[in-house]
Length: 404
Image (cartoon, rainbow, N blue to C red; front, top):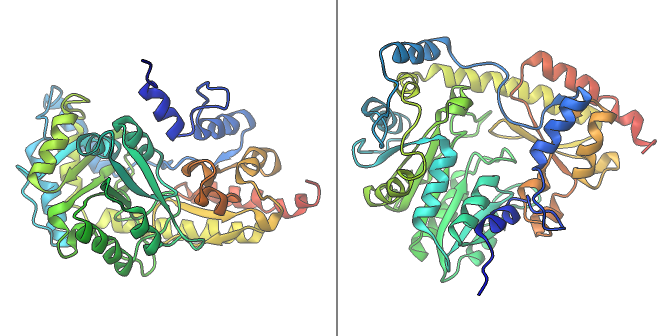
């Protein structure tokens, strides 16, 4: 009897499996390679081009000099677990036990993956929003569970009826990402209550990806799902320091929730990384007490978002102004580009800029992939001078439209 290797399921779920069965490079790698080869400005990948606060970096150096270079506790260093619990209490009124309900992870990706591996398996269904962050699909495939995506509306909002219809007797877990990557949508309280209602009625566990929790703009407010009535006891909340403090390479994340669920995640995690970032963890504990740095970053990113959105509009794109994250979604259809992937392949030559097609975050052939086929994601987490240059280059697209 033969079985399909699990790696093939993961490759298929993340778009790594080519039509001939070979493993292809990711779209992100393809676009980064295009940027390097052509000298284009890379607005495809979402990482800052400026480091986080000096005092946090100095704290990490001090921890290294103090000898904090060996294994840290598998749960995370005590001061960081306490800082995470304090952060959740201070910002959201959540009462979290740092000793039994907090687990430090190697970034949010490990928290999400180990949670899905711990809580689901073959025969289970996992419901997510679509588009979805690629690691969500990969983790579901690794668990052997079935991925059931719920497409966002054309306006990039939650479709509550579609969510309710997607939940069935085999649903084991809801995965909710807000602020949402790749669209920049921040779910409103009314939308979150619709999610919570489904979870309560169907007695479901929920895993929330909240890594952009502090990067929201204008009147948007991030509301953790765990704060809603009846949700704290069924929700695992994931976040990380990378986006909040512009230290993405440190990979210090966490998950918190009911002790039995955290124990399940810990059981998987101890055989994945066990522990990491010993010298970074006390530095992030210090950073989490700082509310001013995230506020200043959000204000700066809001201005940079506006700069990029205005430039994309001037270039002829239609734009959905994001309420959060690092990203803006632009529609190339008004410029005559109905295929976002094709546009992204051509953009380095047409305008000297790189983006990522939103279809990369959808299942091939899905309703969401078709609905968002002409959309492209650009990041604005770059220095203003880089964005000014990118906007200037994009301005030449209108003139090239007729020559396609």
